[in-house]
Picture 1 (tube, rainbow, N blue to C red):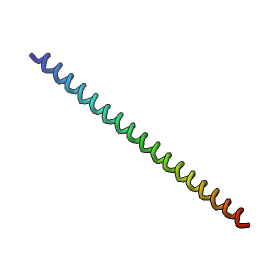
Picture 2 (picture 1 turned 180 degrees about the vertical axis):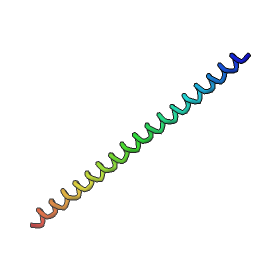
Picture 3 (picture 1 turned 30 degrees about the horizontal axis):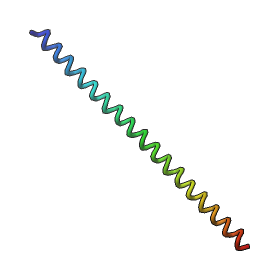
Picture 4 (picture 1 turned 120 degrees about the horizontal axis):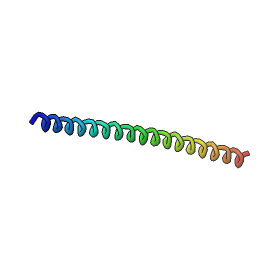
Length: 64
């Protein structure tokens, strides 16, 4: 009887560890997604800035 109770406790403990690992894995994936999103925002901002500079320099060339 004690052996069955210990085995059930080990199974429950194993499930708990597995669910905690899944939580950690999901958190790491979310962090990676957030890092990629901020990188994309930064690149998008740089492209917009470069495009604005291109337009400004073109307007200056036309007006000269």
